[in-house]
Image 1 (cartoon, rainbow, N blue to C red):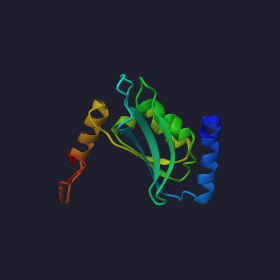
Image 2: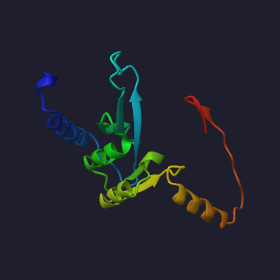
Image 3: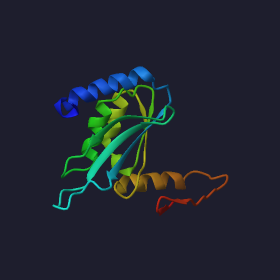
Length: 153
């Protein structure tokens, strides 16, 4: 039955249904993140499936997903996912790959705030941020180390 459905129409219907269940509240965090789906690569060499998802933290609900193109990455899928969502009044968080001027502008155009991670993928911006923190007086310093999911933070 699902093969007969048009994917765009199914997505529109699903989003309408999800919106009827819950409303995003002002200031709610919508986390955008990409994940590779293990076990999706075929022996013939087809690439692993990579998805970008939007998660509404307060509602514990996936708002939408986009599969990245075979020869692409999250940077092209994130704007498509954002365009499908009603983000007004929310706070969108994205890791360093989403730290792009066009993505930040799209979030602002959709009347949402954003928190974007900055790493070495934006060397000039990272240097400017580090410089601005050097100018601030720090009344105290706190360092926390956390381990989990195969990484140390």
